[in-house]
Length: 121
Image 1 (tube, rainbow, N blue to C red):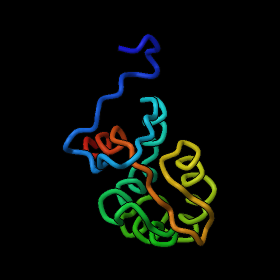
Image 2: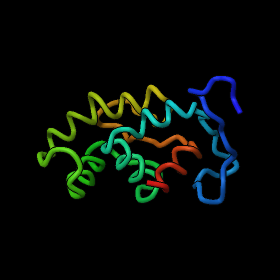
Image 3: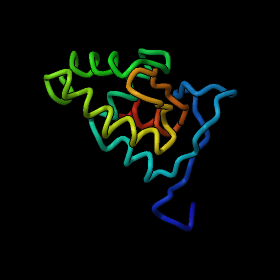
């Protein structure tokens, strides 16, 4: 176990994760993963990228999916603003997605712990 209780212990990928042997893992600390997944919007955004979109989608497609699920505001433009200014920059800062701007695709970067947590919730 780690001497820093906030960092936690990372386990190797399991068969339940979608990360393949060639995917670089972020190896984020447990607290960073929990911070990323603390928001319902970010959980659904990452689930969409991992499970339905093949790891890549435009912010517009993500907003459409979130609205169809009733996640966040009912107004698509409000959801997009939240993605642009809060959720995508947060996930990009953590290294969970590549995000270069509103008209560019969002690309999920593999993290086995994120995927295990998403499966659990």
